[in-house]
Image 1 (cartoon, rainbow, N blue to C red):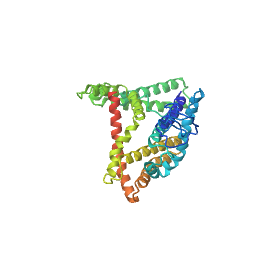
Image 2: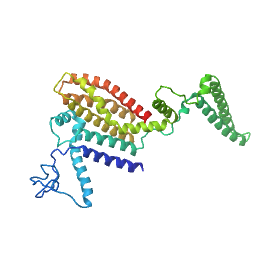
Image 3: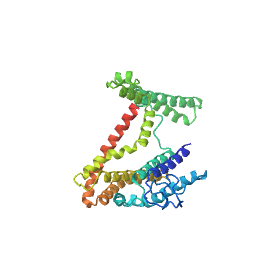
Length: 357
């Protein structure tokens, strides 16, 4: 079912992207009649100049599929003009969109939605998700040592049973005897380590500690995290997916700080920059994930993950704000430091939402 869910995410991403994509002058190829069927105004073009409704109105079952394919086709047509610029000349794309070239390119928010939905769909197809078998007890020294003792004892019993079945002159007896002796030493070491643990670690290691902050909702949420960390991690992953748009308003003040003395740049300009940049990073994660799936070396993928983001940001800064290279490099360094703050704030907000949700 994961593949069907992922396919649904891809289609949903395209539809949501198209839903927020403005009809900025692109042709739809519809004819028009004498009057608008919505407001009765005489039509002079394919769309009513009063209410904006198309002059051609479908009224058939096939119209639903037609509208779906029509919207996605127009969206994809813009996509193939937008992606090359977003990859190599992101600043030019940002500047041209701000300057008013809207019909040729996918809008920043549509690009953002499409990339986020596609990224999580790819994760779902490839089975990338939070672990579901986490257990807080497995992180406690008492439980770890007891588990190691039980496992080693089971291995020793198996080998002792094999040894008992062998003849006195069997050549495998020496190897099995050595393995049993080694297992005995391990068990003794584990029991010694367990005996030397602090009393608090041995007595209270398996108990969930109560937290009293004075805020009942927060205390209850922390208790849920302790009892079922796997479920809470799953909720955190879902929150990243649902609340990824928070990265845009969180980033705006920091990008504004890079140019606060330049009055020609407005918050809208910074919002376009940020949204296109996040979309580009999401697409980079998609590419790295797909390359990992086809067994490209981890060293190459690590180089891509570390090198591409700062280079892309630097190019976008230089091109979008038309600054010199040394200025773009300096601002990129500051922006990378800002990104750690933004990511920390984002995760803290999601953790609080998960705890209080």
